[in-house]
Amino acid sequence: MINREDMLELTRRMTPDRSSVSRIAGAYFDEEGYVDGTFNTHFLKLSPSERTKNLNLAKTLLLSKTNEELKDYKITAAEKKPGSIWQLLDGMKEAELKNDAFLDIFYELLGERLPAEYPWYCFMLYGQYDVPVKGKDKEWMEGSEEVYRYLLCMMGPLAGEYEPGKPEYGFLYPAFRDRTTDEEYINIFEKGVHDVWQVLCR
Image: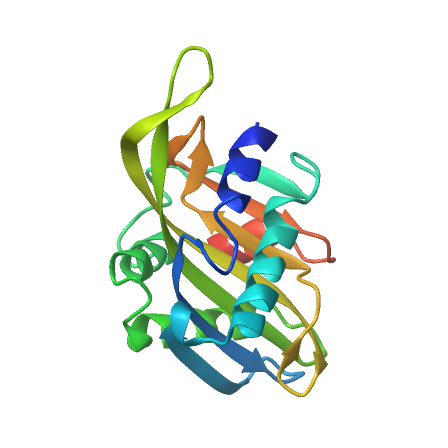
């Protein structure tokens, strides 16, 4: 089960001035799932308004109804076999989204497995969150317990030419559970008709 407080903690670091996000990449797809354009840049190179817009898209996932629209899924060791999408996501995370070859493979898989029948987008954020120490009295303390490194993916229909609408699908990988990294889980967001867990695993 997802603890909503964990999601709220992440969103508190998603403001234009103190964001934990360092990179953004994305692709635009046509009605048949073919890539119509891509981008990949350092997050701080975006204008303040663009940073705000993209962080608000990310917050749509994290602030959605936990355990209803945003759910926990366990990834088994067998599923993390060589050549799996999980190995691809791990590679994207380790490369901090700076490897376009990994991203191109991911976009191709999405285009094949998630036919939307309308123009849509996939944006991916990479972030590093220094998890602060919390005392037994739940008060924040100085110092960091760990660095949570994550990918946050948002997918949805285009509201205009290269203009993202509200996300209908997405995920947070790896999961942030009990204020720590959990490599055995992924948090998946769904408001559309497709089963993203099956899309990722098949």
